[in-house]
Length: 77
Image (cartoon, rainbow, N blue to C red; front, side):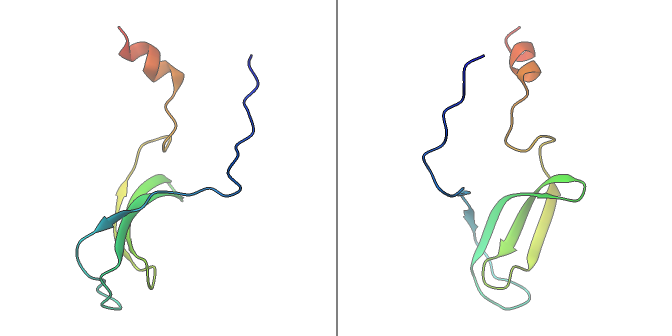
């Protein structure tokens, strides 16, 4: 097994996708969509970036951004 090189980044950065609309709690128009690991697994959420109010929450992929090797093998058939 090959060793995995140590990441050069000192912090993890998640790309958040801006969403149109405004927060129903504070009225700000700073909504973003991104994956979150919470109770029950991975969720795709839309949150206000000012007050962190959850505007929506839908079930995400079972393993988040990880792609199981079995999916890669099965997909090549």
